[in-house]
Image (cartoon, rainbow, N blue to C red; front, side, top):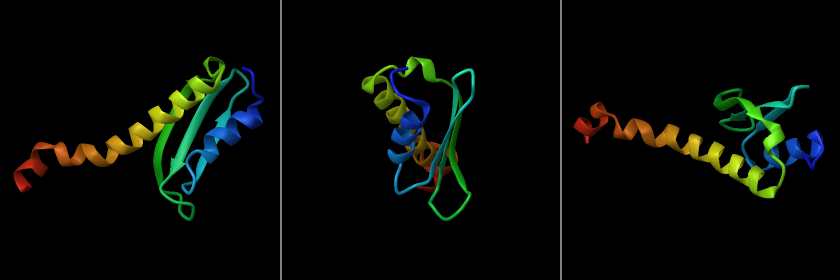
Length: 90
């Protein structure tokens, strides 16, 4: 890992602003990222555990992780629309 844990956390957490994001790194370099619905509540929008921080060796890998997490958040809002019950309602 070319960045310190603090730098890596700062990059990931700030990439989700204005939402609140909490990134924790365990001694074995396993990372957990929590993204909250907004900065004022504890409503969890996404939690991803077991991220191997050792693979985050450059800007591309960090950007790919952030993009994956954002995509997961977007799919949480899109998925219910595509459910059979919602299609019947439309």
